[in-house]
Image (cartoon, rainbow, N blue to C red; front, side, top):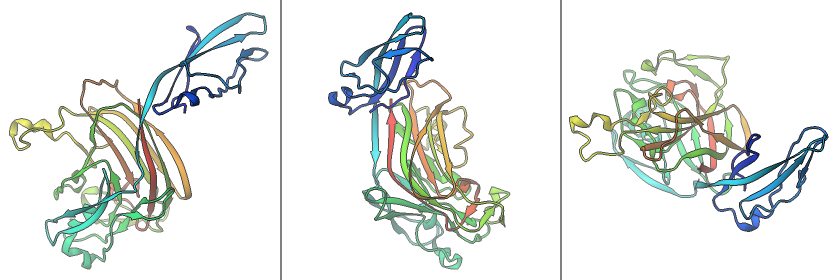
Length: 340
């Protein structure tokens, strides 16, 4: 019911907090605040008592040890909007690689995956021993279906075009193959018209056995085994500013600002565009665990500006640097975005 941590203003005697958008009047009649006051002071209504917030506010009186009192007005400052993805619906996607025949895989509705990278390996997959997909539908998740991401050892080769470690990623955005720099193939972020505050999801994670280190990402096929490291998964949420969402002619040389999408190459470094970011990493997690990841705002949100919002799940947190362990698996389910 309560979405944000209450903010207390001692000088004004106010307490404000947000609730979820779909909260009912009956819900607001049954809120139970936990209140801390200084030693030998009392508060009315008492901490742990049911308080009626159906009128969007309530009055609290604090009496100090010396008998002096102060009134606080606690009020609901706003309602949060929630966008949910349960990974129940998956859509077929067909992609034609640069070399080889087109292939079809499935993707959660509204999302994009790194499965395109597997298709791009095309005719070289048998030689590399690569089979299956990086992101697949799981019939049993935390609740119904879920998404499974895996990191594979793709051996590396073909003149250095194919990396040794290929990471499973599930993200909001699109794919556009870039042979010159594969990290630029992932175009992160969809147009967004609300202010995201946090994301919530369930996950579990199993690291692979052998962790490989890539010293130079431009030579992604050259790796060394690092027995001191254990793989970790990651989840990143980014809100960033763009000059505009699309143009009538992307090939127009006057529209160089068009391609301001963040990619795997600059997701963490485009400080001039990033407005808010949150990052979560985890090692082994055998059972489903719920996570709330808050976004930290680096710049002020302006509803008059244009923004894209990206969420990226990765089965190896340093997969963008071609580091990780083949066999690492991340399962995610019940994803939500909470917006102001």
